[in-house]
Image (tube, rainbow, N blue to C red; front, side):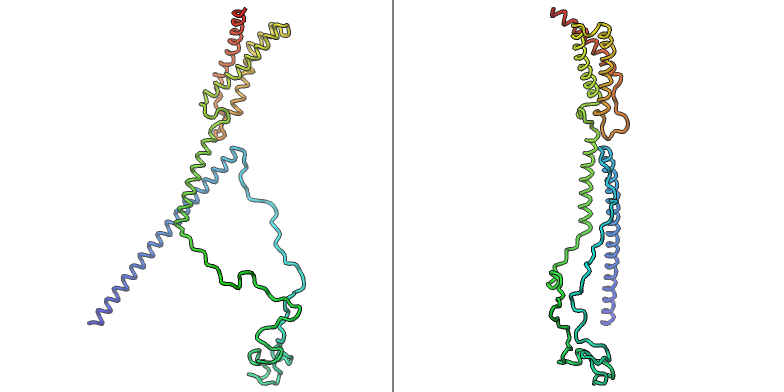
Length: 294
């Protein structure tokens, strides 16, 4: 009975170990699947980030990095020269050779016509376990550190930790990418202003410059350099049209965000109203001020 109970306990122990091994293998397989899924997800994220960065670079005029197309570097060649090491082992003869390194053909040995080798002929001249370096020969040097104790092996990295670090870096890259996109959606001219306020400021500034030119032309007309018809044409049509087109071009050049597709809003009707009203109103105001000062 004692033998049967021992066998039963051993069988139960083996069954428990087998089930534990199966559970461990299943857990390891599940862990590997999770690691592969996380790695694939990070790979997709990094690919999308790379494409988005290429788009941002193209928007600001930076070409996308490509594969280098230059010629491949030439492989390193070993300079040709005489061999400085020992070309042959001194004292080593061929089998059955009657030279100084081999046993004579009829000498004693394990068999007829065979050489006993260096171990079979100790003390003989010209025969040794290792070749002796002669005069003028170069010894074979080992690389530095090859003859010492090998260094410690690097510690194995945990894939879960590396994936977590990669995920954190990807999150940081997403945050910086969003900030770059927000900055790219702002124009270079008055970036913190709204589009309507920016257009109003640009057209008003151009109309102010046109009003200054109008005052100059009025003064030139007072001394006889410009006649009345030319002055009226420039005040009613020429200067307002120039100020309007100047504001239109300024908004198209410096008022366009880098990441906005298509033409930016230029508020043509608002600009036309401001420019074609501001210059004549400025002329009327100049006349009223001149009459009041007189």
